[in-house]
View 1 (cartoon, helix red, strand yellow):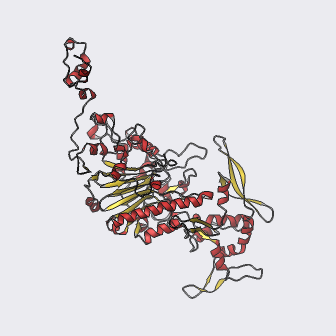
View 2 (view 1 turned 120 degrees about the vertical axis):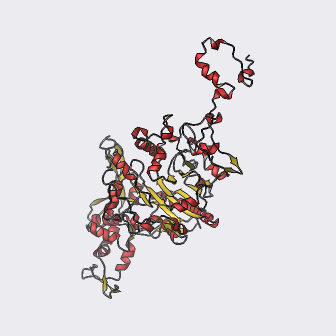
View 3 (view 1 turned 90 degrees about the vertical axis):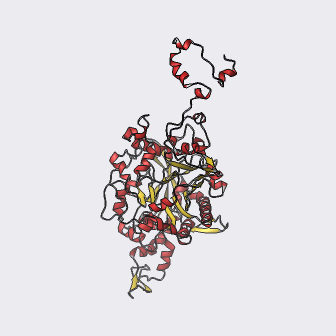
Amino acid sequence: MLIVSWNVAGLKPALQKIHSDYGASSGGTKSTANKANKSTVDPFANYLRLHGDIDILCLQEHKIPLSQLSSRSEPHRCSTIEGYESFWSCATAQNSRGFNGAVTYAKIGLVRAADGAPLGDPELDGQGRCVMTDHGKFVAFNVYVPCGRGGAEARESLRNKMKFLNALKNAMDRQRRGGKHVILVGDMNLKIDRRDIPYYCRSLNVDEILGQMKRGEKDGKGEFNNTFLPGEMDAKGSYQFLPKWKWDIANHWGEVVGALETLEAVPRQTMNPSTKQHFDRFRARVKLGSGKFIMLGNNEDTAEEALECYTFDERSYTDPKNDKCTIFRKKNSMCVDTLAELMSKICDVSWNEETRRTIADSNEAGMNPDSPIYSWMRGLLEEDGMVDVFRHFYPTAETRFTCWHQLKNKRYTNEGSRIDFTLVDEPLMAFVEPNEGKTLRCGKEPHDNPLGEEAALLAATAGGLFEPGSYAGGGIAVATKRALDTQFGEAHSGMIYTPPSYSDHIAVSLLMKSSFKDSVSELVLDNDASTRKAQPHKKQRSIASFFGTAGSKSSSSSTSSRSATAGGKRTISEDTNEAPKKKSVHSFFGGSKAAKENGSSRNSSANNKKRSVPKHSVLKHFGKK
């Protein structure tokens, strides 16, 4: 059983690219069964087969309003894929419509029930961020966790995010108490391991380093030097020397503090070199003791954003679980890159890349341990017994990211983050297909060190076949067919490097044993209220379906709607090859096939004879003889 999760950043544009790249017009193959009526295989269904015949597909950020499903504006009939059922959570909240959204596609017979509002909170469920499907032995939560914001919105943003995460944990716990194991997939918008971010983004706390240095020794000039800490020894019994970068911080941090007291945001104007359009921006600036002004950071949209990067005061928020004030960032916590910039521009102390990497790999650098988001995720792994399948199989993999900043072309230098996950309850690991003999994909061809940074870069760029877009405009560069096809490969648990033109995220995959699929197949879909609500596309019946006209495409929804209903269950028709009898509007009102066939020869002599009116014809109502 292959389960794939993917944030498509808008299902409509993603489907447009898939149809363009893998539809009939781009060389897609004709369906043998449908050649007679010149119908083609659904490009999306074909796309799923090319990816190893996906059994369960979990998409996030589909961004399709509820009103568009089963309407003329539904993109590429996306609610209906041949051989699959689809279950939706659409944003219905006033400020979320047309955003967010989660949808799970599952092969017919793999789902017992579904819930598009599983969190039990109308406010949270109205954001369209979670859909749960029941597969008998387990339930799958497909989630799009809210992203965080900085600046003045940081506290409220964190509170809302933690409210969502706590509700999600409660929903999973309810399922476990009911005897279900849990699989959690989706865009979690969080990081759990320092290898999930670039080395220079790792966090460290300057005050903790200064605390270590208080026990050090000063030279005759009153400065710390590269000496040992008295009384501290390593495992071999030798005194432990501290690295030079720590002495640099101890000797110069006072200069940094003095300069940051003059921090201000100054207006800047930038220009698009292609359109010549000008933009008002802001950039942080400090004044040194010499009177010289130094610019920090990048041009930002607002003054608050420019100052946020260099404001290191303690941050706290009100925990939604207990309404207590909780610290989420200690004073003087910052990333390695920011610290290196301050030391260079203010103190004239430059660290080369080797030194910066040494800092990032030290025990003092990593994820922010005070973050409640980090603590929540650690709780899933350490207390609830869930397993991060990717890290289970690839514990030493470096810079394997799932999301990059598109506008800054960060995918082409592989500067991103791993925020898309496949997590399973520990008992389910016995049913996960071992990755023996398999490894992570590395672009066009295998790599000697598939877990290293170079291999990760080659994978992200398809060995250089994916090219960055121009900063002058024009969008993402068009990829060749060879580049596009590198996304396909053997089914496995890991990462699927979908093209950058499809989304700023790639897909992640989870491969279960075939025996596990056999044990959860042939399920009958419930007809309960939650399941019906998760399939809003089945509520609307077209005029064609009212008159019994079969659609041009066969689908799981049309198949199940034609099937018998008994005992509150929707059963799937066993004889799916039998073509339904078609009824025309003419025949509905009593017209005969012969009369229809004679319609083209009404002016013939045979047609001049008086035709009898059928007994139940609508014409009788108007007195037609």
